[in-house]
Length: 459
Image 1 (tube, rainbow, N blue to C red):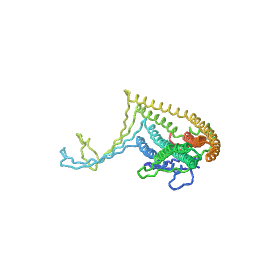
Image 2: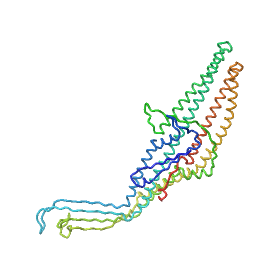
Image 3: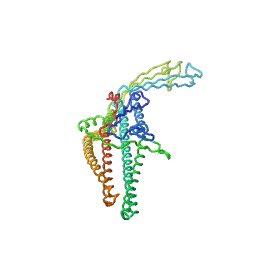
Image 4: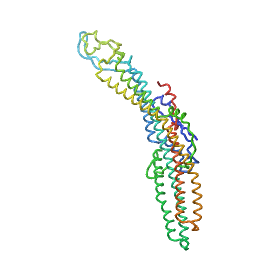
């Protein structure tokens, strides 16, 4: 079964409005989904709630919007800077041929445009990469939280089943204790048999309580990852279904190639290399001259207004004027400011490259280990399933005989303990298999796939 979730992240720019993340939740081999009942949650519902309300995912979404704003800041280096000033005042004083007090107002416009700056191309690329990094960080958060939700769901199912199994076993032992009490009262059994049967039934109380506490802890963890309100009267989620096992036959080579292609943490590591490279280029751009063009314009509706500091009419404002100029700056002497920052940026890029290579090299080893665990667990489950049938048949025969006093309480206790241990082992094997499948899905990047329609145009 596969559920698809599509989420649009609204942000201030139209680019982010066009961006979509398609979440493909992997639900085959779950064995824990069924028909919904009141108050119960399936794994599909747990995933939906986690995507909508999980605090870590919500924070990652906010960081994505923040990265979009930072992208606008980095792109602003290519945009012109336009400003307007309107000075006004009163001119007084006396100059030859003039008299009186004269009011004035004028408009001044300024236009500045970067003509050449070596930092412009890497700044544009760095802004794009920053958004992609935030998106992949969101993807990583989604994978981690969905994986935690899945593990908590399985843990709840396991401990609830374990509690139920032990309670069923205790009920069977209590029935035996009742039988031995009746036999003791009519003189067909001695007091030691009654005491042994009662003690055996009570031995499971602590184990049942331990399973109950573990179940409640798993419920609490599930509620937290789902983002549920944990107030005083809040109800904890009740996972629906039972753990089941389905054989898995993974192809290591194809799965390794697919994992290298789609895992969000690997994509993030590669993007961190690109970001560090652009940071280094931005710093190195200080070695090159920067050329800026300026256009300044003044407009005054009347003539005869003196410019500040002028000593003759030839220096005064005319009705309007436009002045164009260009200038450049060049960092000639470094003093270690640019070179040192460049070395630090280069070191960061190299560290990111090494980290990425380690992650990529570890993928096949990780999948190989999980695959071996899956095969070992499936083999163990098959052996325990056969052993359970034999243990159940032996326990049934001994139970019939102990009721008639044909076997001792010690033999009955041994067979019942063997049955409980076998059933518990079988349940644990199924639980471990489900955990291994979840780890396989995480390691192969199957929790979802990221749609990079826009990212393909970013270089």
